[in-house]
Amino acid sequence: MSISAKVEDVEDGGHSFYEKHQKIYPQSVHGTFRRIKWAVLIVTLGIYYFTPFIRWDRGPGAPDQAVLIDLPGRRFYFFFIEIWPQEIYYVTGLLILAALVLFLMNAVAGRVWCGYLCPQTVWTDLFLTIERWTEGDRRERIHNDAGKLTPQLAARKAVKHTLWLLTAWWTGGAWVLYFSDAPTLVYDLATLQAPFVAYLWIGILTFTTYALAGHMREQVCLYMCPWPRIQAALTDEDAFNVTYRYDRGEPRMSAKKSVAARARGEAAGDCVDCYQCVAVCPTGVDIRNGPSLGCIQCGLCIDACDTVMERLDRPHRLIAYDTDINIHRRMDGEKPVTRVMRPRTLLYSVMILLVGAVMVWSLSARTLSDVNVIHDRNPEFVMLSDGGVRNAYTVRILNKHHTPRNFTIAVEGLTDPNVEVTASNADGGDQAVTVGGDQTRELRVVVSVARPPPDASVPVTFVITDTADGETATATDNFRGPGAGR
Image 1 (tube, rainbow, N blue to C red):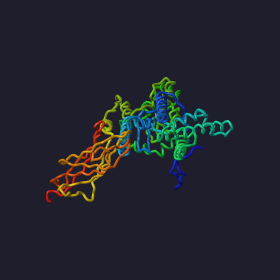
Image 2: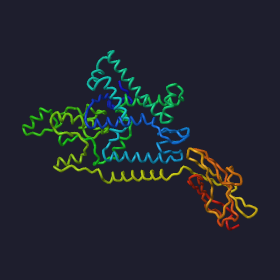
Image 3: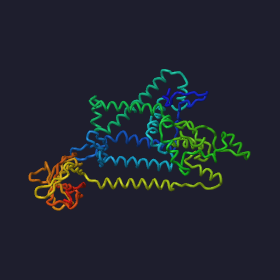
Image 4: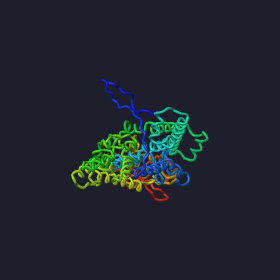
């Protein structure tokens, strides 16, 4: 018995508020879209399971895992890209980019994300493959579930659930490998030396994968996922969706009756009411009833219908990616139109290019150093005995490189400023300081001028320069004084 995603029915006046759950037994199918789904499944699962083991040389002292979320080190590594906590806006940019791509996919081909790329779809496909391999195809599974539980059937179910749990466990294990060095963590997990949090998250993800992909399946799409509701508000009449071409399929009748009707000169559609499109649907939708919240646009019903049409020597694509507009155009004797390039898709495309270009420019222009400056609040300035003015600042230098670097500090915006750095490398007020690799260093910097500036507050720029490669970083603040009134 499958786990139901619904609460129990609530009765009110003899009418149920909820549809009773019926287990879906999707039938296997062969064809173009099934092959596409196999390719997507292999590629996406391969990327997910094996990416943590890809190595990337970042030099001495740096992790060599290509993709790593280093929480203790507060870094995110993605091949040659390294993101620090203060650069979280890159993650925000990626989320915006992903949302825009999803909107564009929806505008072009409806819920194509749901049908091919959604993790729930991919893992459910994998679990269904295991189920067919151990228990047989649709008819055999229905027959077995309707009959008694024999020892042979119990053994086959035990093998199925064991393989499900192993797949779910591998899924959870692969996830935690993104947060630590993969080979090391695999060894620690095998020798029971890994931290408890690793086992905890593997357990949580094993349970959720086993429950969602093995038992809840289509109920996640129908009841839990918000995207079908959002997608319905974003689509338009020009978006391609899996569509039953009723202009060609109606009126429905068996193959023999349709032949006889056509011989008599009567109308007969190509649909023979075989229900193969329903049998292969992973959510149990009858696409012939029109657009449905349950349809994930996977195209498997197209493959099933094409197989039937081929056997009957009738044209393919009675079910196809199409629009309702084109159906009505064909019924009126007009040619179908394709409007992929339209204001909506052009807007999404331009926004994707714009956000992507900004992110690429920002990544290419960023430096491996940074500086922050905070002015002392009390006192804001000190009058010197010779008539000069002194301000004090807290300067924090950030070195994003993995090796120590030497920096000099200069101040621009004042006339002949005297800059003194506390805890510098050399005696005598030398401004050169060393910052360790992947570290920040906080310094006390005192800036003084011989004559008070004419204004009470003058903008100044602190410039740090790497003595080796000349890379600079700047921060602005203000130099305060008594002003012209004193």
